[in-house]
Amino acid sequence: MPDVTVYWRPMCGYCEVLKRTLERRGVAYESVDIWADRPEAEVVKTATGGDEIVPTVRIGNRFLVNPSADEVEALLDAA
Image (cartoon, rainbow, N blue to C red):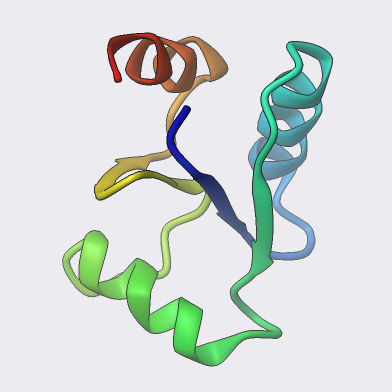
């Protein structure tokens, strides 16, 4: 299974819902707070065309911007 990273920031309700849903479904992921880790915020900005849009999820070399848990699982299943 490819590595999964969830980029988030504090006070992001969508981020919390996605992380909780992935946990309930047993999807292991690395959690990165882009406000605490500025170099990783630059990764998100590159993936999203210059904005700090969260949640952003990296699966292997692919990025999903504001995905649902179903979209994340579909990409994992296809990998």
